[in-house]
Image (tube, rainbow, N blue to C red; front, side, top):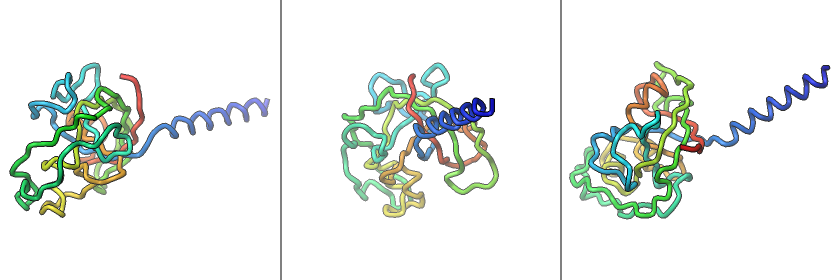
Length: 191
């Protein structure tokens, strides 16, 4: 009987390893999609909810999870006010974003900002990619120190090789009690 218990224990450990292997580390910022007039993915509404308890999200075009060509445009300092905001906030086109309509499970793993007050809820939420978070959008790059802002690149969709998502602000309390941005696990799923 001990051999049977050992086999069951080994299967449980192996199954837990498989579950973890599919998730990748990333970061989340938060966006109120309802303040936008459009999103990069045609056919999707600029709303925080995408129905059936699915939250809207935008993927950084610098993310390893991004599929397709990066968004168009360049980083132009003349579009920044030198204090962290843009003066010409028109974003680039993202005609080759191939993740539109793709869903991911997201779970908080900690505070990106180093907060000590608050905690992850351990809830898993579902997000649907309906927009892009382009590195060449002045609303993103004008925030970073290189253009006069004070936001770290990792919190502005400006950090290469980081799985960054801009998730609907309405999802924040489902993920954590932290006030700032989050470290997250991301896992592809069906919608």
